[in-house]
Length: 165
Image: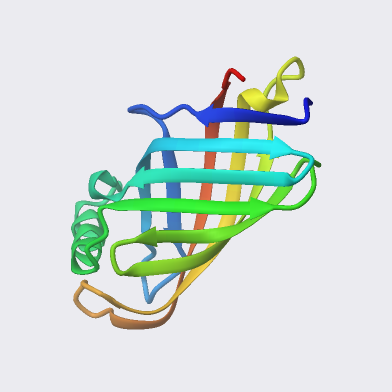
């Protein structure tokens, strides 16, 4: 790699980040939010990663859960989620520490970013993984109400395009 390289995250209709909760009573929340923008910079000073998701367009396989998730987001004025983080070193995989913010919510989130593209261009695709804890959340579903330790997993495979110098 050069002294510093930069890639754009390719969004689009089929580019999603998956957000999954653990079991809450008898259910779990599993949603996909579309990626609208993002960048990855890697250099001698470390790594910087940013990502934006359209939370107001999230999808789930269960209409009841989709309604509950959207209601929870509206309550917190959360339409777009913006993540910005940085990490040390230039090795793959990278550990990136940052904050995900949306509306009234600001969550510390550490992501593991791994280059998983083909051998000729490993940076053509990355894999994200991480876990965030929101603390106490009121889930708008009958029988659930207040969840004291609400956390969710983040995972995605994202295509990248090298940006010109």
